[in-house]
Length: 376
Image (cartoon, rainbow, N blue to C red; front, side, top):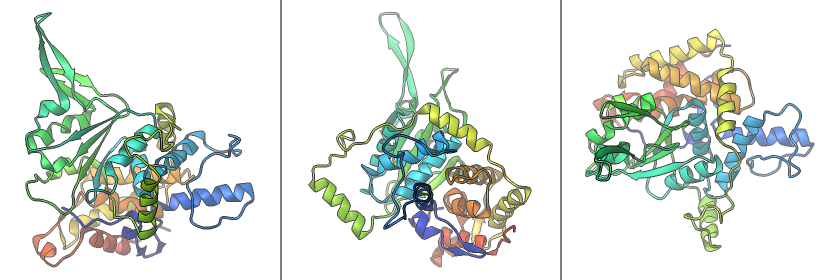
C-alpha cells in the first residue's frame, strides 16, 4: 500500500497527450496572470501572489480565490519548498476531506499545518499517536464531577478545525478506529450521545515512510477515508540553504507571529470558496474519463486492490477544486491527471510479486494515465 515519497512535481511526469501540470504549477500560473494584468514581465522563479500593496483587486477577480492564494504566501514565511503540499492541503479544505502526509522526520510537516491554520484563522490541535494512546484520549470521555455527582463530557483534541494526528501508524488499531466516525460523520458518539465537530474539520495525519518497526499499518478502510496522500520530499540544495539562513537569522518555528505569518482568510472565505467549487462544471466526457482511470486500476496486473467508487468521487471533487484554484469554471483532463496520484496512490495495493520486483504504486498509476484515452 505504501509508495516511496515523491513530490507532486516528481510524480506527475509526461503523459500521453501533453505534460501534466503539477499542483505547484498554480503558483506560476497565478503569478503570470498577475504579471500580465499589471503589464510587467515575469522574471526569475515564480512567486506566490498576493494583492497589490494598495489593497485593490483586479476587475473580475474572485475575492475568495485570492484569499486562499494569499494563504500560500503566508505559509511560505515559515515553510520553505513545500508549495505543492500547501496547495494539496488547500484542496482538501475546499473539498472537506482529510490528508495523509508522508515524509521523513524534519521536513516541516507539523510546522506546515500550524502555519496553514494560522493563515486561515482556524483552530488546530496536535496529538502524538503512541502505542499506549487510548480512544478516549482522542475523542474525549465522561468525567465524574464530585460537586454535581454527575458525569460530564470532556472534549478531546478531535474537537478542532485541523487535527494533526502525528505518526498515526504508531498507535494500535483500536485507537486508529476511534477517528473513523469523526472522519466520516463529522461527529463523536460517547455514551449514546452524538456530538458534532466544529466546521470546517479535517484530519491531517502524518506517517514516516522509512521506519515501520513497532507500527500498525492503517487498514484499507481507513486509508480510503483520506482524500489525498501528499508526500513531502527533502528540500533541494537552494531550499535547504534558505532554511538554514532563516534559522541563522533567528527564526523560531514555535513563534509564527515573529516570522510574520498572519491571518489572511477565515471560515467565511473558505465557505464561499467551497460553494464556488461546487459550481465548477464537469463535462460528461470528463466524468467518463475519471471512471475509465479508476476502472483501469482494478484490472492492472500489478495491483491486487483497485480504486473504489469513493476514490472516483474524490478524484472528481479534487479536480474541481484544482480547476477553481487555477481560475477556471470547468474541469479539464489535465486537472484529473494532476490530482490522480495524490488522490489514488493510497487506495490501491500492489501484489507481493510486484513489490518484490521493486515496482512503485506511482509508476503503475503513471502507466495507467498514459494508456487511458484522453477526451478531446
